[in-house]
Length: 188
Image (tube, rainbow, N blue to C red):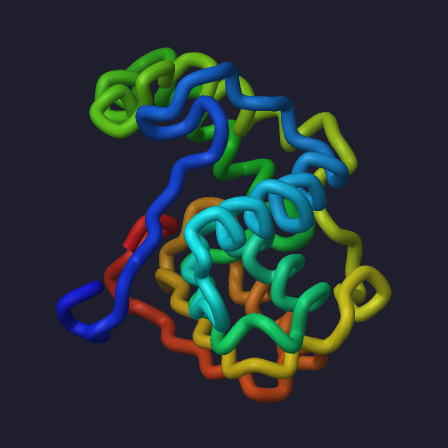
């Protein structure tokens, strides 16, 4: 990405995700607001990042969107990959399938390639089901309009989010462009 875009890239993992230390936190609406309005601004300030293009996948897309809606004067553009912004039946079905896969397949080992503590990350992700973590529709009731350009990339076979996630953004982000990847799921 750095080479193709000829831009510097700051890549970070949330607490307890990737190789970062500490246990991941259970999900709640406050969790996402904390990530978007406290953690991300602190990182951007620490590394003196000005006018960023934010790229977020899944939950990271929600964090990037909340930040951009709250700081429209700062964010140059957004790239949201497989955003999950509100609860929908596909997410619950996909999570049930993932939970079965966790018990019956090599999903744990595959996550362990990317996360220091795959058990804690998976449990934190599953906590979405019993929380108020996702924004209710319409998104406009929770977020200010996003003025920067917005690219949404979504797999046509996303296991956790249907096109309703991107469709919900249309009123909030008039400069949105959507790219659907025909042979892809939640992680293109």
